[in-house]
Length: 236
Image (cartoon, rainbow, N blue to C red; front, side, top):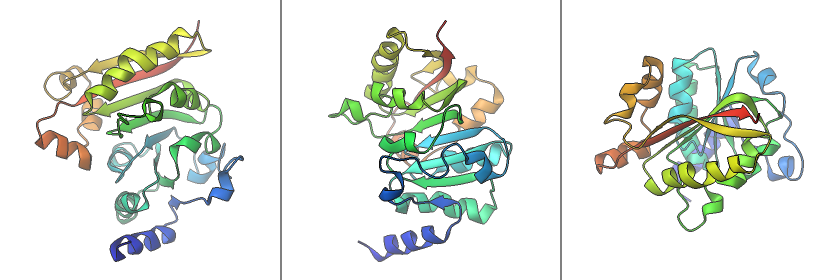
């Protein structure tokens, strides 16, 4: 392991807003902040998650735009988290936390109706393992355990495969099972910057113009960016 990574890991340990629970703290039991995240932030503001957040561009970017909300970036890669954690510290953002853990364990961290919004930005499309995709039926089942009714799920991706899988397979199949909740499509475009973004209000345009490290790479390669926004609704 490189010295630079070791240095970042050491600094993460010093950041009060970076939580790195040991496996023993969450294996087959709930994390100490499950159901208590508003107490952790010291307010009752809405909670927004960025899953597989990488360097935390959406966590930090939205925290700047919306001081009236709380943001939690989740990733297993500590060296990547360091970038967003350092930015949040340097800018004095009090509405940011980073959580280093596997997203497979996410239900150990959040309680019923605790989360208002989820962002999945440029996640690995898991071409050979569809069940590991963050929009698979497996993960949708987990999200509804802690999302509020009326909460939103956002997917922003360069991957045509992940986009079409989410739009045409996983979400429709989840909805067809007539579960207590279903995901209603609020917005859908496969050409976000060419046409789609013009249809959105100014606030959403600001949010969607936040660029991640990976997004910038894909844009430079000429890839089209896809975006879908769902609302979790109670099944009538």
